[in-house]
Length: 477
Image (tube, rainbow, N blue to C red; front, side):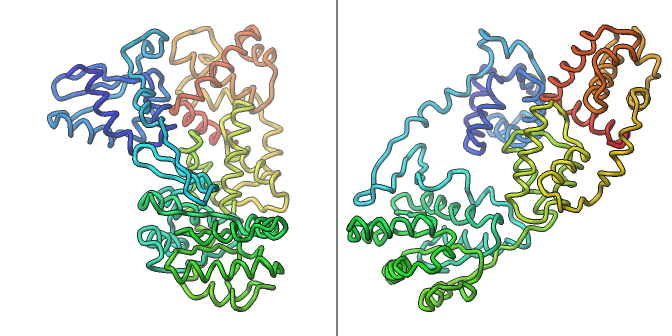
């Protein structure tokens, strides 16, 4: 089998197990370079793609290769820059593997014009549900194991167990993720079922519109012919008497016909103020579960998963620092991570504990930072000089400072020299001209080139990211 055909067979096997966006990003223009003596060499156009695939998908690739040829026992990954050339035909254009799947068919469910579903490669989803909310990508820890298990049970047999399912907890803990994930899973398991997701606020608005425009019959038909009814943030029904009455009758109709009902709220049924007792009693008829704030290990796992989704590489120590200092909700975890990503891209800086501590403090001035003293370290940074950075970088790469600032252009000296210039510029704020003076009177354009080249490499070289973070820790940054 030709090298390219063998790699295509591998890609077809692993494609269903990888998100489309990730698959297109990491496997575009890749191919098998060599297949000889039970050993395969896979080529990638960039270092970043090679490192990412090696770290995340090596096992999947190995299993796929052995399914095709059991004699293959070793896989190596190499960078071949020619694969990134515009007219090169050696690499696989993975977009072609999705051509058939992208031709989606759309159907409208009779009498429920709001509920559209689309099919593609056997997958069914509702336009009311966010496709990114899945039970598989909900990070499960000790504090949310029961809610996740209950949702999985409901998704496998809607209307048959835990009906209604009532999930409550503080804002930002993942209630919306879970309730929509159940809807997506039901559509996957039962493509012909009608799933209706609505926020309580939207339901109130629709009731008011139906009363005002006199189409209550159409409204009743819309909600009472569904197979699974998902209502988010039911506490908004408080003091809405007409809405409560309509919801009560809808609830009864669906429950009596064994249709699945899932409800979320910020508090248990007994604590819902200004809500009728008959509604609260029905909410408590099935399974009532509290969703708690995740512990440290779960928060860290969430951050690691989000880094994969955002395609970011962040030092594990920095992620542990974030997990240690964000205590309110999962949404805040993601918010801090997005801020880190934004600053990293805008200022071309590698995230450090110091920079992340400043972000957390900026987002919440009352936050007490654990594991880092911003004020003490701010004073420490003021007295930092270019010579300090040179000494640390030279020591890290087992060089002398004289070698670092000298004229030697060997690769093993050029790289530390460029890193040193980058750190002095980005961490101490020196001008290009003053950095050039510190490096034996070099021209400012030489320094600028070194800084830009290092910033560019940091976006695709995982080893360089680790080296610079290690150097920063030695510098106290």
